[in-house]
Each structure stands twice: as C-alpha cells, then as structure tokens.
Length: 184
View (spheres, one colour):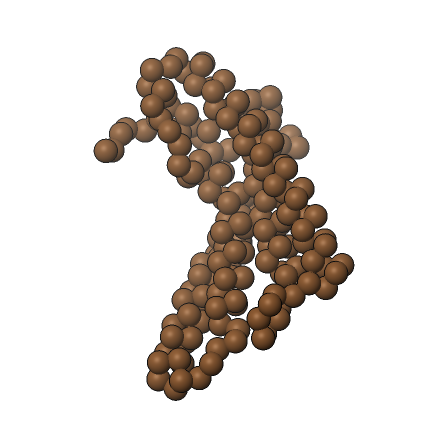
C-alpha cells in the first residue's frame, strides 16, 4: 500500500546550514557516501561477473573454483556495510509507520530522535566489536578456511569501516536539531 510523503521525510536533506562543524561533516560524509555508492555499484557488477564466471567455469569446463565465491562474498560484504551510511542519510531504511499519522509533528520529531539514539547505541556497540574483530584478524593473521585463504581482515575491515560511517551519519542526524537544521 502506498502512502503520501511523511512529514519527517519531506524536509531538506542538509544537516545544517553555514559553516558549522555539523555542516562540514555533513558535506564531507555526503561526498564520501557518493564515492562509496559509485564504487559499490562497480563492486556489485564485479560480484555478478565473478559468480557468472564461476557457474560457467564449472558447467562448461568442469574446472574447480577456489576463489570466486569468497571474492564475491567479500565484495557483497563491503557493499552492504559501506553503503549503510548512505541509506541512513536518505532515511531509506525500512520503518514502521503505524503511529506516524496519529502523532503530532512535535511528538514525531521526538520519536525519530529517540529511534536515532537507540540506533546509534546499537551501531556504536557493533562498530566497536567490528573494529575489535578486524584488529584480531589483522594481528593474528587470520585467513579463511578455503584453498585461496584470503585474509579475514579484509571483510572485517570493510564491516568496521561501514559501521563507523553509519555511526557518523546517525550522530550527524542526532546533532542536526542542535545545529539549527531540519530533521529528516
């Protein structure tokens, strides 16, 4: 069922106006997210090509593949986590809108802020654990259990980097009302 635009989604996407630290961080994060989205599109195409090559290689030439599945998974992990800040910045996540129409605009702003606080707390914990995992994989030289044996620090680092960007995006959205910007 399609609904019209929700009040908190029709406002300006800028985090703050002027030259405040929130505005500078918002612009920097926006540029970073744009670059990541373009690179992620390329990575998705590469994953498709790699998996297609894997299937054709096995079906036509009966050749074993040691690296294709893992390479595609690494690319997909990077795409998933690194683009999460972009999705959050667009408020493109799935949300339950059962109460949005019933609540006043002020209560909806408070609700949205509280959801962002809870999201930030969860994502901050996830980020911390991701960096811990990436660090352990790097220091211990952990590799996957396949014949190719790529370092596990690669997907763990992509996960940690993406979660860090997501935390920055949520922090920016939390700071927006205090920096004089409209909430999204």
